[in-house]
Image 1 (cartoon, rainbow, N blue to C red):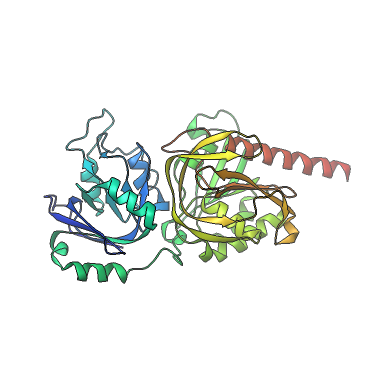
Image 2: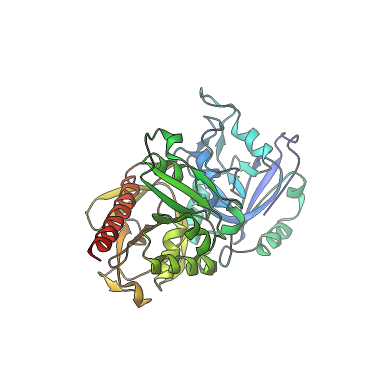
Length: 400
């Protein structure tokens, strides 16, 4: 929730960050002024702040940047990962006084003001991070301008009355309302598209369809409310479910949709929220993490290869699936499934692989904008899965 003043009010004022447990940090305003409410979380990336704040997965969250100096490269129109800034509020230690980069088109402060995003600067982000790391992600509020004049008790009451992340249904809020197509030719691919996929936008980042298009895949991006009929109208070679915000326990419509996709035998790939939805579709539960995984330096083990990947992540929920080898999915018609990837920080499930149907998912962001590119192979793995599924179908038809 964000209530901001007009963009013209750029003069910094006193600001407070009020946490749900009563901890208060004092600084000055950054960006727009007013009140911003959401879940306070920390992101550990040393770079990529523009990609972070425009990631729809951060909707309804107050993001603490653990990197101390933010805004030095400004912002531009090319690096945004969606149509707007999605963070509910922004918390930094040392905001750059002016940007210094040849690609900069305006300052981060100006962008926050223009989009009405309320922030706070000059606070000890290391202390905030340590507090959240100990107590867990929690509701919070940023108050600046006239809103900061209320008593601490009044501000804490406002935070306590705000909505928690548990039970939040946000995918439909951040998703596009109209479908669109990303063509391989737009990203240097020569010749006909190799495959066509339906990508359900639950909070998709712009780099994700680009990574597919670079590999010759035509991407039909559909709204979060898409039906199985919408997917069938495209006649895709595969279906993709994107990242996105909110509690996966609220995604009943998407779980039902995915079960129909899996029943059809269409190859499936999901990331982040899409991984949680696959887990639910298979019959597993999900749960809220104490503080989540957010940043571009999260180590993950690929259990199939033994390779460790440094990954880009942004999630506060996880799949509750057994890690001790292949098991039959609770939804038995989908056959066997195994946990394919594990977090090396806290042993959280980071990927699922179905062994009897063409479906897999990971909890992190292989498009990595910003971030490392260790996981780019997953796009190729999905292409290989679509190719092998198509080849098997052709062979069956020829035999019949």
